[in-house]
Length: 305
Image 1 (cartoon, rainbow, N blue to C red):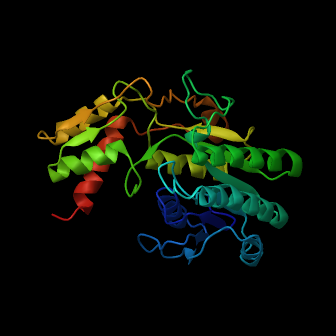
Image 2 (cartoon, rainbow, N blue to C red; image 1 turned 180 degrees about the horizontal axis):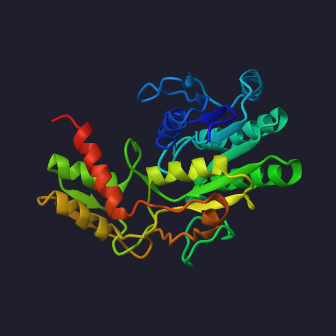
């Protein structure tokens, strides 16, 4: 469904890069904005190796390249990063969203997809987690995602910006660089190291494979008239770390995995997904078995012997 040029912030990242790759493959004119170089060249994508927080530069870029749609996937990508630099977290995650939203509004962008996070909800002891679940973030990162959602909801309501927020649960899959117990288990098993996870025993978590996230993001770009601002994005199941460990062990019989935990471990219950199916035509297709299997195969192909 190629059409208006698309700008992707964070186009070299876990979600932004495979998204750019898919959009280029289907014929979209794609512009990437990321201070990091792409992990691989993408042919027709134009990459700007710079940040995305300067309002005047953003407005000029949108106008000069006649950008019609934006996917804002850039920023500090998890509560485990930049913990010693709170001002950077707030400036990069919230400040850049405000600047980009204003530039998009002034430039008449037709669709703005914001890559939000389950961290905006914080702990979610009630199941299922719906899009109207109150925000109770427990980290500055989560607070910036919640605040960005609120800003974009206001731009949608008060100024007519066609903004859609996708609240991804924990994304796993190829090229994830930040902490992830699934990646840790696989890497340790392949290297013959023991895995010792300090938390999570007995807890379920709605992981989502990166291909499902890319599918959902494209669906949000293409949907003709999303009826609401926010949509949850998660996998079709809600596995425990013990289940994931069994999947890793089935491929690496010498894997030594120990999972510890206590009552204070974070809780994230199953995400409610019917709204995304109803309005975006998206449902997850990667079960935890399929996703972990694909992730292991990716590691086997991309790890030096």
